[in-house]
Image: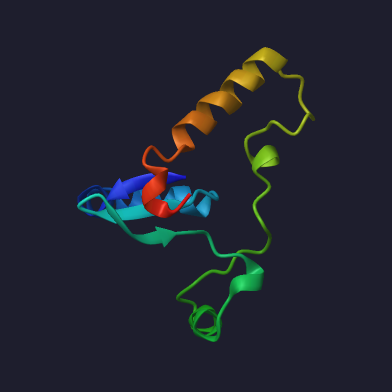
Length: 106
């Protein structure tokens, strides 16, 4: 899970929204206090308002839940060096770790 402050979110909103579209969850902080969480929509979580926006063509609903393994090409279909694959997974896990998890109640 990625954590960003409001100023950074404001300056790079499009990039962060692309990450959310790809399945990433982003916690938004105001002066280092968590205030919001951006999460990708799933078909089962759509509200009446979202359905109305989709009907108006203002919102595109996801057609399926993102399969991260397949998205990143690590589903075993291709021959990948297992050591390299494990190193990538560890790096992504470290990048997603919440440095101040106590604030979020973990």
